[in-house]
Image (cartoon, rainbow, N blue to C red):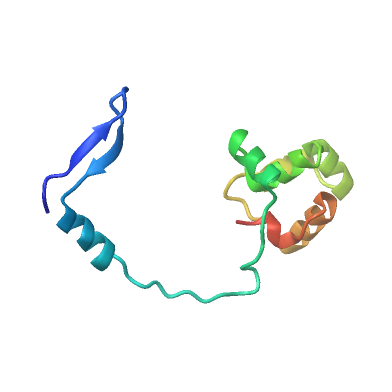
Length: 119
């Protein structure tokens, strides 16, 4: 492998890399491999841009972004579903995956499909 040259921004953070053409061609032509993929019924699920924006800009989970987009508080959700605010908070942890029945109830409140509540 040849020596690679980095091009940094004014803060010294690498932004680009310069490499020999032969190495670039190797990466483009030989550096890719097919990855097996099997489509399923959820391939066409989408998440509205405003929900994604909330998730990214406010650094919250997808479930929290849907709730915020709906204009509801955790207390509102807890009251509507007959649970506690603490339970709603736990559902909204980034790595949490509420039960299917819970996702169905949340989807009804948020006006979406249950499949849109998971990444």
